[in-house]
Length: 181
Image (cartoon, rainbow, N blue to C red; front, side, top):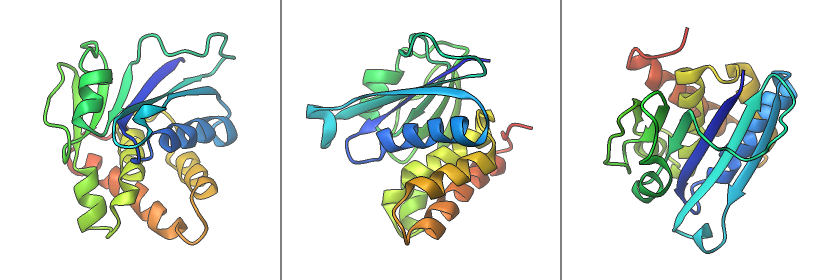
């Protein structure tokens, strides 16, 4: 089954890294196909940035996301630029610490930045909290695949913090009673 995922936020939040990790989890640990694209440039420091992933059971012939069915939004500007036009049947995981608009689709409001800062002590792992929430909300890759991909991708010495951040995202969705079976 084909899934098109769009990540957006502002430069410095790990938007591109999140998409890379998700693609790695799909390809290396869940035996799926994936392709990842990104937009950065003047957006790289503080402006809206976007990255996208396509995950499919079959080889992917066209690498661009055309109609995302899943969104991960980490800033208000990212929502306005890349998420405001989400279709009604889309699923959106948004960082309620920084996004104040609400889409007209299925929405999981995760206070990722607040949780990363207050619970985990490092706001830099907010994107990993969002990845945990994404997997809990959608089941797009397995939790074990995501954890392995995170541990492969983060700087040495931060593995425990990032694993805890992923688990916190999963817990936040489960606490809301919306986790995928």
